[in-house]
Image 1 (cartoon, helix red, strand yellow):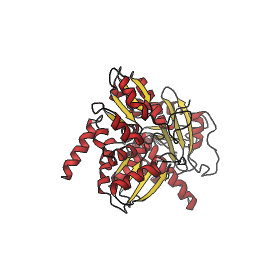
Image 2: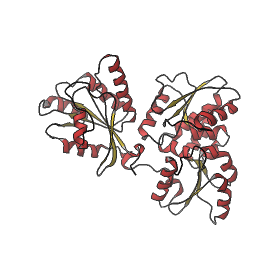
Image 3: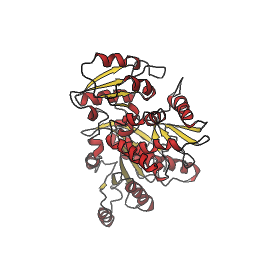
Image 4: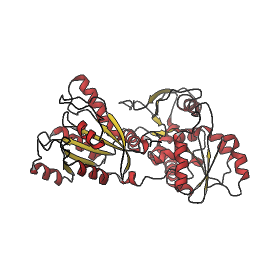
Amino acid sequence: MKAPKSFRLHIGLFGRRNVGKSSLLNVLTSQQVSIVSEIAGTTTDPVEKPMELLPLGPVLFIDTAGVDDEGALGELRIRKTMSVIDRTDLAIVVSNSQEWGEFEETLVQQFREREIPMLIVFNKCDLFPAQSCLLNSLAGEKLQCLQTSATTGMGIPELREAILKSAPDDFINRPAIVSDLVGPGEMAMLVVPIDKEAPKGRLILPQVQSIRDLLDGDSFCMVVKERELREALNRLNTPPKLVVTDSQAFLKVAADTPPNIPLTSFSILFARHQGDLAEMVRGAMAIDQLKAGDKILIAEACSHHPIGEDIGTVKIPRWLTQYVGGKLEIDHARGRDFPENITDYKIIIHCGACMWNRREMLSRIMKARQLSIPITNYGLTIAYSLGIFERALQPFPAALEVYRENLLLRK
């Protein structure tokens, strides 16, 4: 089975039109991934190419349109290109030494502000060798520069080596999802409801990833449906170290799990794994300030068609309405469609983003924080609105402390 995008290092190629980004991608992947032409602006939408870059592992190359595109259509292309920055783990700024200027400096500044590692690649060096003064100037800014030629293959092995060495540490040493909360030789009980939204014949990605993470951590794992949990617990000689439930079954699972057994949800695990748990805990506490008529945004990384009692379109709006005691104005965003202006929203409630890389989720959290818009996720919202927030945070002492400190500040 291919690695999901969330497990791939996202490598974005950025630069002006016709500097050879697409040619560079084709030679890096040894495939004709992007259309190459002498006509500037051939690449319109971002082009993705997943591959294995050994010994690093699974990566996703993203070829983008030129940042100097023109006209109304060009502006749309530039907007799509800039949105790729939100999910870029490693940036490759492609130029030639004849054209280094404002466009490139703007890109460099964007990556620096977001603390995204980057490589500067002067392509077409067989035609335009980089000037030593420019190389020295960029080196003085602690930027790694390489000279390549997609046509002759010059510098390509060095570029591959630089990509391997520049991969962020949190990709190489990927944090655990749940195994660090359980420990080797200990058991986690995973509660997996099988309802209309459960994919036929398989489990959803967060459940699969959690099982694999527990196996990698030498932990035991038992999987049950919510109505079987109490009987399963009674049959165990030793209680599990942790119970993890689908957030939709929180109330029943909390009732059936003894208070001495820590309890949380898959969604809250992913608030930590894919985002910033402390920030999302603070965001969930903003639910107390909601009033009837307030505008909120519910965002989901997937663009699936909701069915039945969908969690994002039916259940969370219902629970929030009951908690607030009045009707709320709710907008929905799916996939990568996200409002440019979020200042009208009192809170943003996001899914666990299991299909994305962590960088993209952190980018949305950063945007919300910069505008002082509270942001949280599905599991935290459900736990808060159902009155079991503190219990759901017990496995995370630092996040629990954030919650308690903010409670004190309100008094």
